[in-house]
Image (tube, rainbow, N blue to C red):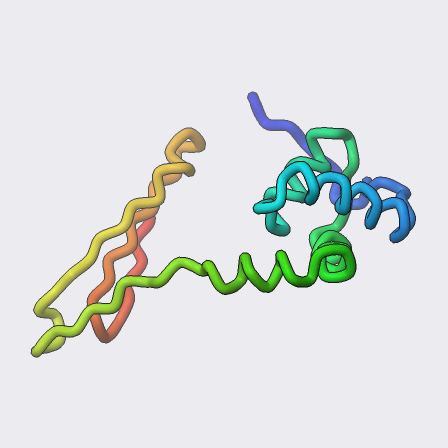
Length: 117
């Protein structure tokens, strides 16, 4: 089948102080790690921790770095067109193709239509 079942209730039993120390050590080695990267890194080391706990730990251990990463958010493209439906943008979601699920999102300046097969 190829699918791996992971129970959602199996999180690591780690205290906030221990988590803060792990996050502090990891942040010193990888200062650009945000919440997602930190979660993935800790998982690769065998620690399954809730996203919210990692977010709180990052706020406690590295608040300045967290704010700096928030300021570097990606600027989204804005479309300025004269008439509705005069410019269309098509996005495909290719990461789901391996599961035989394709998703195509078609958008224009005033509405978004989602198509899936």
